[in-house]
Each structure stands twice: as structure tokens, then as C-alpha cells.
Image (cartoon, rainbow, N blue to C red; front, side, top):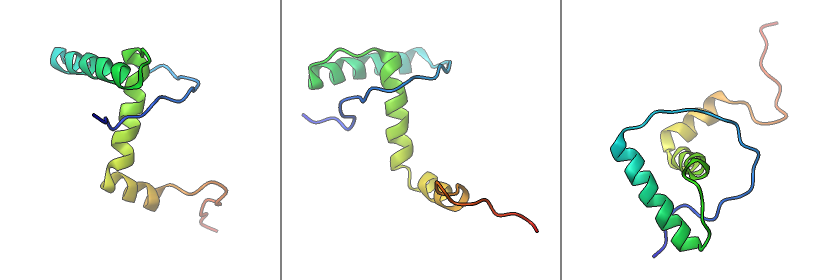
Length: 82
């Protein structure tokens, strides 16, 4: 069985607090178990959530189009009204 989320890279975290329903928390904990079993490496729920969100945003076509239209690429100069 292959799950969408691969092994997690090492990063410097930024703390963000959210509230979710009990049902979502239960599902997230189930996903953590599956991820740990798939990659043979234990992982904390709070570590996994940011990567799940990143995957979601990466695969959202409307969001990608929005980013392309509204966020300048690195090194690009911002437009000014001169």
C-alpha cells in the first residue's frame, strides 16, 4: 500500500495553534499510525500536519493558479506606480 505523504524532511518549525473536531483528531491519529507503519519510522501528529497541509495546497489547482498570478517569483522586482 502506498500513501500520498512520503518520508518527512527535517525543517525548522514555526508554532501555529489550531482547533479541530474530535473526529478529525481521530482521523489524524490514524493517519499518523499508517504513516509510521509505511515508512517504519515513528512520527508525532504535530510534525505530520504541516506536511499534509503542504501536500493539499500543492495539489490544489486553483490555489496554484492563484499563486502564479499573485506572488512574484524569487528575484522578481515588485511592480511600482511611477
